[in-house]
Length: 393
Length: 137
Image 1: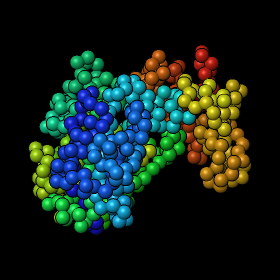
Image 2: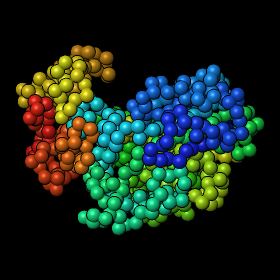
Image 3: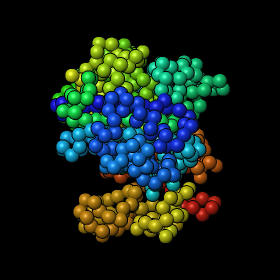
Image 4: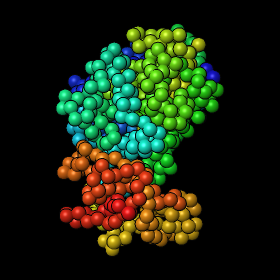
């Protein structure tokens, strides 16, 4: 199914404290994507802006950013599913193009998290949960994922060392990704309990430690999509959207069926995307998964069918998800090393897969000319799940 | 009004389920049950999405459950800074009813285990806020 393609990708470096406003932040990724596509604003029919709105003072950012990028008077709109906002933006753009409404659509994800303090940021993220019945207990994102980690570790025998190995893999690629916020190597000693020098070891929400958690960051990403006719005319290496899956789940933990199985939205979105693309997990040559916490990457392996239930740890411990392994995952450093500027994250994951399929990923390039790539992008604590599958000519 | 009294810090003042807080003062932790189709809800709902009824009654939650999972928070969001470390968990009562709450301070973090038998009780903080917590069975 080659009807909608990606013809341009861009991403800023993800940083602590971007020296500019959100419109300037958005411009940096947009400029790179437009230059990558080799098009001008007159070629663009519509734009979609994606972020988590509570970080910005600007109300209704879409119109403001569209103007700054030179994309008026074309239609523009705002899309939000917290951490998966830009994957949802891609889904909306796909629908607009497939329906024939528009030929070329820009999807721009952005987040300037440093506008507010880390504690304020935790409070806002906690409020991405059930504010009526759960936030009054003092919840925050690491605590929610820790609930999944605790249940999973108890049932499947996953250890802290297994989780550490996810972070060590991530840092292997964070070191070589100049767009990542965390670029230092991580070694086992960094997780040694009781050692004040061990910077990854401190508890955040037990069983998750500092090193199990991704960092806040500022950043933007931009993906340009086109219909088949435009893609063939404009792009030498179009990357096709082959499958899209998306799902939602109860927000309150009291309504979650089973904490030992990972996130239900991951399974549901993967099943839809695989069916639409006519493939299985075995056909995927390179993947980006939502590793906001180390446990999330292990659960994603299973949700995507890369490993059977409870056996995800074997993939990391056997290095099967390293660049040279049988199914490379997050070989750009993932959220753990790149940082997680909420609205920009999905677009960054997609950019990585597009570069991999084009053979342009540089030192992160997976060998063997990968032909199918996958992006798994979760919003909230499995409140929203998105899986998107890409292929090349 | 009334629901601003719920929890360590409430983000909601007005809800049709604010009676939940009054019930806490009476020592009861209650969910809602649809009078028309019998569906039970915890946390409470004012509206039944199964049959679209708005005809709800209150029922007392079971006392005996198992701790399905938990976490101990060493950092807290804004407004909760004085509290860490505190443990939160999910209690499964069987038959589809579960509850999320903090685990009582009297239970040491190292004593908390997945699958342990637990109960719940209402809780009043020094500042008058009302909540409920997980205790040993």
